[in-house]
Figure 1: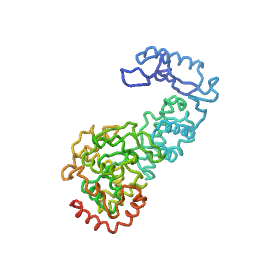
Figure 2: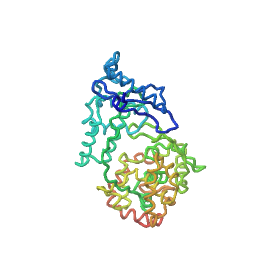
Figure 3: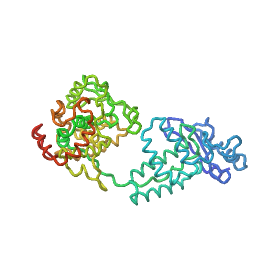
Length: 452
């Protein structure tokens, strides 16, 4: 009997590492006109192909003679398929349990992912039964989502994120470690071409002189300017900096430990992205400001309490740049190839500065907490074209950040300025008319830096 004619295919599912024997054999047989995958005995190892072929032939013969019935028709199945999934459960119904399981595992982006799923996946696939979704259904969805991008209904990166959700959902429905989520004998996303990628937009960053002009502008609260300095010199994620504890800042040895972050949706404090804490040396030029901040509030638990930045951090940052007289077009442009500056780009600025200084990529990767070196190399490649005329990276911080400032600067102690956020927003909006004269006065009087 021909295996090819009877089963269609036989394959090993598991690790691609030849040194490992983790996985199982499976064959595909036709039952009631449908081709389904059947797992072979777990005792068969990766090298037991001959035995697996013989077992597959036996299953194929039983299927041909009607001795194997479809999974949902088996006696005692009580209308369920795998892992307790109800017969006929739709993708929309299954996704509720899937997101609950992802939240229980501590995966990030829950609310944003649920929003994307509801808007871009549920309308086309949500009413289909999980066990009945085919490769053709997925391909039709990809064709539709590409059309939405072409019609400018969504950005191509959003389409890529939605594709990531679809493919992960189908993968988990096939072989999730959470057995209650398993309901399929195959992954219909395999060998499906993902949505098209669009044009990558340029990543903005601050030059050192622009940074100095921003942090010396006394029209911006002191605590906000200090937060900007830490965001560049340590390049942590926003959630990591917001809940940074003084116990994690070793001023004696010049070392910092980033081991927790706040989720901006749930406000829950947990492990940082990637669940990998990291420890590294503090930039020497940052230490004087940190020591001054600690001396101002010796009993405080957190470095920033309360958190001085506005909820809309990106809008606040761009407004503050305008107040400080930093008006380079690339920082504010938003079009097909350019993206305006966001708060996250302060972190990117720090990584770019480190690459321009010539730091080793693995060193930058560790400090930034990048999961893949390819992410870090984007900054290294950018830096190779920027070094000439870029300016001194990680320059000494101006005295006004270390000693504090008078005028409208926010005090480091919350009791002296109980509303740093509202002050920042109001000053950012009302100070635009005065931005040129204010920043020029401070640049000349403060540290002698030239405007860009």
